[in-house]
Image 1 (tube, rainbow, N blue to C red):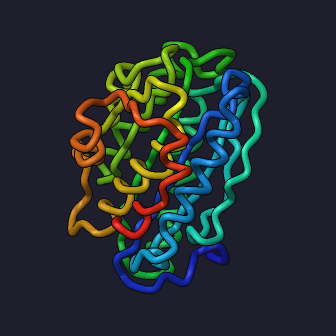
Image 2: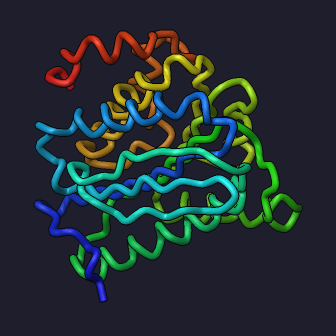
Length: 240
């Protein structure tokens, strides 16, 4: 059964899985994440390819918490925090969840979709059942397999307790540091939105160039624009 496969508006299908850290260390940033996801959703209101995109905003803390794949206009922007950081475990389970959906979309539509796997964490693994040599190897192998299958793998290191080097060691194609916690709304709602739109419009997967435009616009990988700027100035929505 493929009951959750969406009715896509074209054969240029894009699938995005966001794996978002909701561990206890994100407690003070919960409002920023919520507002950032709402801005991300709003930015696609007039985007021509929006109905050919499926997105899952899945989360992780003590475990992996999958969210259904939905059209962006229907995506779930709810967010709360608790627990520790089962990052290796959730990368493996998130990858399996993504692969299963991609297989069902391909079977139902006859189209091989363009796929993006985005992981955002503000800390290294803590109380992670896969925080062992074997578990870490499973996470690294999952990223290797996704890369080999043509999936654009993206790692976002948020805050100062983790860096993009973590993602690089696991083999993620594209990694970035978002050091200033005050810029999270702008990053999710503006910069990440830009990159996802470029991925959706491009004739081929962006891969290692996923954040190229975002990095160019900020002139560094550490964003300095405040979240208040993003909330107060919505002119960017019409410019993207």
